[in-house]
Image (cartoon, rainbow, N blue to C red; front, side):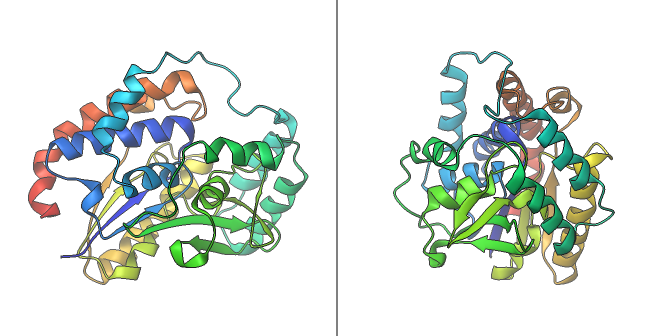
Amino acid sequence: MKRAVVLGGGGNVGIAWELGVLAALAEGGIDAREADLVVGTSAGSVVGAQIGHGRDPRALLAERRAAPAQPSGEAAPGAVPQDAAGVFALWVSATEMTQAHAAQVGALALQARTMPEEQWLAGFAVNGWPGWPAQTLVVTAVECESGAFRAIDRASGVPIERAVAASCAVPGLFPPVTVDGVRCMDGGVRSGTSADLAQRIEPDVVLVVAPIGWAGRGIHRLAAQQLAQEMAALESVGAKVRLIEPDDGARAHMGNLMDPAEALPAADTGYAHARRLAAGLRAWWG
């Protein structure tokens, strides 16, 4: 049986929530490290790189809990609020995200004032990932100028730190990252999940863990619309898809997905939620 795990975008809070979900699932016998393919978008690319290298999500969650509490504050140093607001206003104005609209967002991303690209990349280098993991990992990004989608993996020759930094480069908040000579931004511009990439392995089961897509407005609206299409396409070819999205407890901490102070509370609510789901998913996971 072929299994895929799709980890969606969702900022600092989304990373923590995903770790909470995956930790509880692992306790319940559903270990994402057993998947044949992991698709990571933005926040999901960070989590995907960690579990791809064999890190136990339970240990990662324990490290989060043991770390000093983080105060609310500036999560995107160097970003100019007016620039970010302009990017997001254009982003959410789409009725459907097309390559042309992504290119318009990318044009503003290239103009936005943020921290230097080198500083942004340095923040990912400290993870010390030893190259691409043995587990098949696909990381998403979008080219700023063309709006073209990039699915980056081991075969691409792109260093994993650079690929993940590009996938996390939220336009207007963080600098586009140069990949093969092309400036790239957050893969979430195209889709909050890119679950359609799971079709690469013709999976029997697909677990989608999606921090965004529940609010019915703004980026959430686009993410939900795109995910529904992706899930329908997977199910049309016989894949059994299960979606985990934030419950009401987690949503209370997701007003600002970049707020470091909300990360641990979101992780704990994700953990509690997934513990309730694990027993019902165990047989499906196989």
